[in-house]
Length: 65
Image 1 (cartoon, rainbow, N blue to C red):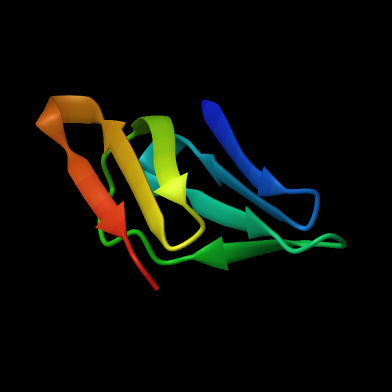
Image 2 (spheres, helix red, strand yellow):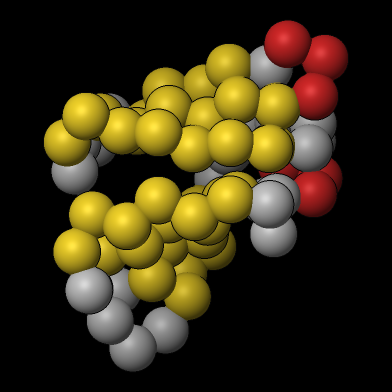
């Protein structure tokens, strides 16, 4: 994993190799579908429902549940 973005103690996001995107729910890591196999190097969000991931080859993703 290359980066973490904490929303709260029970909502933490992680990104990494091969498009890995995981969400911590306070007790376990839950794999999320990123839709890419590009390595994700950074995470940022302005709110719990507005998360951005950036990675290899100019990959930029937005997750807004």
